[in-house]
Image 1 (cartoon, helix red, strand yellow):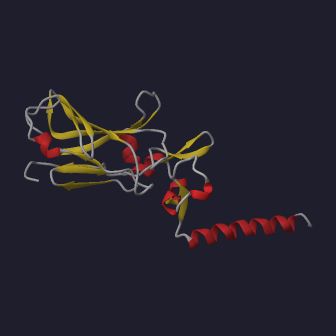
Image 2 (cartoon, rainbow, N blue to C red; image 1 turned 90 degrees about the vertical axis):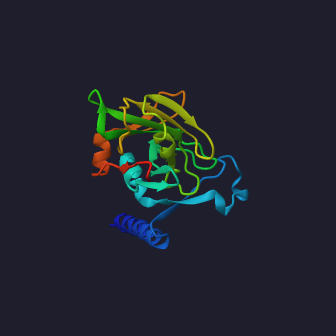
Image 3 (cartoon, rainbow, N blue to C red; image 1 turned 135 degrees about the horizontal axis):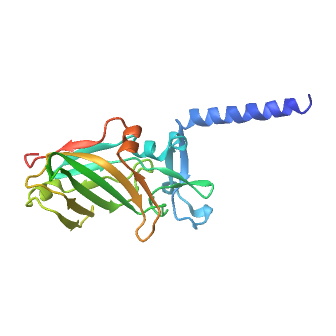
Length: 223
C-alpha cells in the first residue's frame, strides 16, 4: 500500500503536467533548430520553432499530405506539402533541412501524371526535383514552384531542363504526346539524399490512403 500511493501520485503528476503543457502551449512543442554545436548560453529565441504535437503521432505520409495544397501565381504552380518528422536511431528527426539543422534528406521529387491525352497508351509524366528544406515553418516544406507557363510554351516532347533562381527545380518530361495535357495529378512523392540509396517514397496508393483525393491542378496558358 505504501508503494502504491506514491506511484499513483507520480502518475497523476505526469498526466497533470501533460495536460497543462497541452493547454498552455496550444498543442505546440518548441524545438531547437539552430546550429547543433552552439553553446546553450548564446542561443536566441529565433533558434527555436514550434512543432505541431500531432506530428508525433502521425505517419510520415499523413504528415506530408495533411496540409497538401496547390496554388497558382504568375505563371507558376506551387506545391505545398507537410514536413515529416521521421524516426531514426531511436529518436525523431526532421525529414529535410531546417535552418542549420540538416535533415535525413536534401531533395524532393514530385511525379505528376497528365490526364486526358497519352502517347501510345502511356500517360504523360512530369518529374520535378527540388531542394528539400523548411525554413520559416518546421511543420511545412518550402513550396516547390513549377514554371508551368514556361513549360507549356515549349513544343511538347520528351526533355529535361534545369531552372535556376530563387526557386531552382529540375524538370523531366516523359511520354509527352503532341499536345500538352491540361490536367496533372500528383502520382508519386520521393524524399532522397543525393549520392545515397536511402529514400522515402509515397506512391499513388499510399498518397490515396493519406489523402482520399489525389492532389491535382489544371493548366492552360490562359491561366
